[in-house]
Length: 282
Image (cartoon, rainbow, N blue to C red; front, side):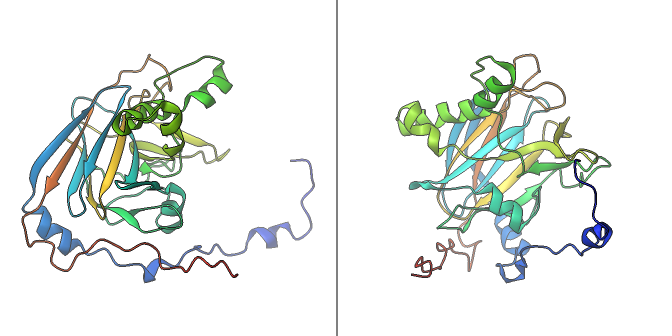
């Protein structure tokens, strides 16, 4: 600090905190709707995500998918797109503003502007018991970005090719049969699945700590529209020690896709794109 506090500093600091968005106008989460469908789930697909690598998967509107821990404590970085238009993709910043820094059952993953609609709804979270710990850490954050080779080079001066950004880029390029240069701009800020993070209480820096995830834990979501997903099994492993290198034990993750019995989603339909008229005052 280089400037002295003014005489009314305490008064300025003591103003009430106001939640930016009043979200009571959003469609309410109806657990009974999803519970009825969940009672009849049948697994129809499975994708294994190798350690320090990424894989893509597709989920049709009305299906469920689970990200599952299978061998050891491991976090994953998730990207989601409209399966028919990569320009519509997960918007972590708006999801954070509408819900919180960390998401769980009942929260939705929103798409970017101008579509801005729910892409997926979290329907079950086996780690919802964790809440927030004494350090302020929580699970499944939408505050971090993704480990990437550019930041790693800036900080360490070395090329490392298995950061989540690069993993996701390779996976998307392979799925779309495009070049890395064409695929990379579509990679976006992630949902950090199973990752335990927060901001330090003294310096307010982003921190990570060992994830509480164990084999058998999963995060389940309902696809509100047709989705293309990409998941990276982070080179940080459970993110309890090092980051962006090969020194940390890493484990695979599994994405499972489920379908519910016909007629169990009565009244549900995919959300329309945002209704704003896009005239921007002109």
